[in-house]
Amino acid sequence: MNTDNELLENLDKLHTTELGAERIKRNLSLDTADVVDWCKTKTNSANAVITRKGKNWYVNVDHCIITVNAYSYTIITAHKGK
Image 1 (cartoon, rainbow, N blue to C red):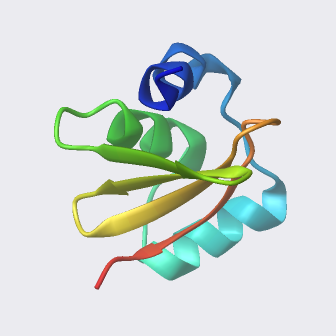
Image 2: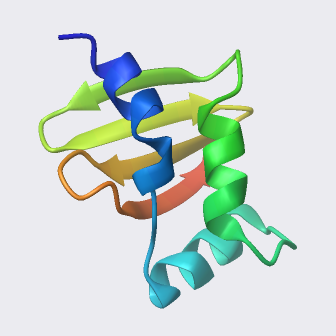
């Protein structure tokens, strides 16, 4: 099973909690009202590298890493890459 396609096929299911949205904004210094839409756009971009390790997907794109739960499609966190 190609997990890259699985995540991309389920982009409409991506969501986060209120605390998760605040954490993502803080970690990435984002100034956007819709964090989920921002993450969807980044995940769907051509230069996104999607890997799955255990129960999470990791989307490495534009010097940031977005962590998504593989079962619930919850965006857990995002932080700047090294």
